[in-house]
Image 1 (cartoon, rainbow, N blue to C red):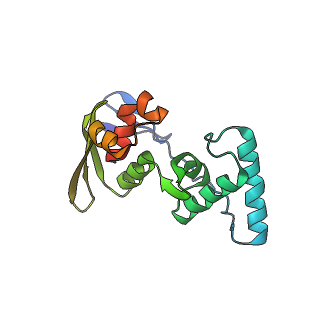
Image 2 (cartoon, rainbow, N blue to C red):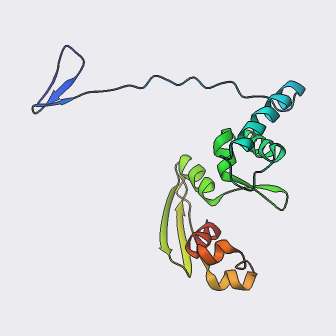
Image 3 (spheres, helix red, strand yellow):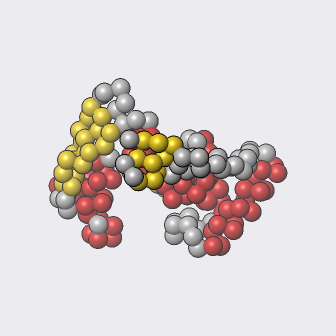
Length: 166
């Protein structure tokens, strides 16, 4: 049995249930990096972030940080999430596997790791419209492609295979 008390709480079977509603958080207006004033403010912001040591090691200049922030803004990704999830590969911004899967889930997609080991990763995805896809990436494929020479492949093969499958 459910009853509502005068203080706005509900009581069900002798247990009190309190409903808490979060107030909306005001977000600061985005800086338009394509104006002189916006670019200057963006560079100051990027400089502080680089000096903080909070960013990934590869984001070691304000220009790199600002390029990633701008790429994120164009994809409606907030600056700090962009700095953690967008990487510059051969001069191009690339979304990390984690960020790609997060965005896919955010659009109603389902993600399932069918297999994940140091030798093989198989990912099954189902889009919001019901379309299904399964992708496998193996260590054999990675060796054949010549991409296993870096430390990350030796130290974290499972994670690297999952990223390739994604």
